[in-house]
Length: 393
Ligand code: NZQ
Ligand code: ZN
Image 1 (cartoon, protein in one colour):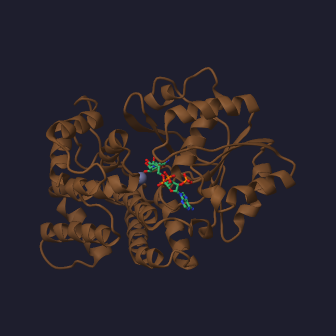
Image 2 (cartoon, rainbow, N blue to C red):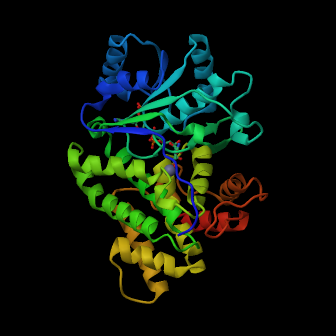
């Protein structure tokens, strides 16, 4: 096995009605003044926010609530929330929602603990984050894995950039996972979340580093489990068992467990972030629109790895490594299609793009050609353009 370091400090409380334990967990992790963040209103309509407020009030904790986080969360709203949280003298940030809400909560925790620094400096690496406030999560959407991840992704709308900050200070103190809270998701959003879960493991799985058999098997089992339960939960959103499997897979997919001992790739995420920064593309859809084009551009670097994926997850056992690799890519694409997800740029709301737009995306993702992204085959500007072009139909 390769050397690795793994720390998932987040207490996960899983099951029906677990949001009733929010106040108990807040107190356990030292909260006195809780700044609660939510999104565009789904938690208001479902009554979840009111239930959380009730348990916090019943336990005598002070709190202030702020909504308005939108998907592809904006830096400007995070800055506004930081001002609010500072004026409230918050000592704990609670996210009630999906990845966008959680990532905004992380930004608010960092900004509130460091009022002298504009948070984008942390994202740009111009300032080093040394302290933050604790964060808690009541999860409503199995997708981003932010409930345990060390990442927080924001969109700087002025700079036209979407990017992540990676630090252990992003790992929440606790995460409440009640699969019933996801029953109200729309099918497109649930499908996009499922794709994101798959991608968090796949972006760790495609590697040149061997010798992590248990990690590989965990990854393959997780992927197979998601493939098995995705159609079930999409046909019956209120199937508790199926939603449980998807939600727990989502959390495990992005906590680091499925990629121990090797570098992450994540080039498809970065190619997707450039799309989202420009066109406000849904995160999961940005990934499914690009993944197969990326895979076809890079699999020859190591066909055996793609072939193993095809065999373990899609039961492809015939043909040369190259043939099996291509069959696995095709099966993945068909699976995304079966979930009614886009597998090309033309199927996104932004449609087929012109040459200048593709070039701008390739510039965005590589900082004008100054850097590469990913590790399986580092993606430079020319390769980024090639991938966008291949997906542009
Ligand atoms: O805003 P509300 O009204 O709550 O509606 C949301 C939003 O419109 C809705 N929703 C969430 N839970 C719901 C619900 N609707 C009905 N019932 C529920 N139970 O879903 C929509 C999308 O929400 P969002 O939080 O944006 O989705 P997701 O969880 O997929 O998060 C996506 C964001 O996370 C980032 C992505 O880039 C994107 O910005 N990521 C964060 C990561 C991390 N921090 O580790 C890793 C990921 O790779 C990803 O990049
Ligand atoms: Zn993702």
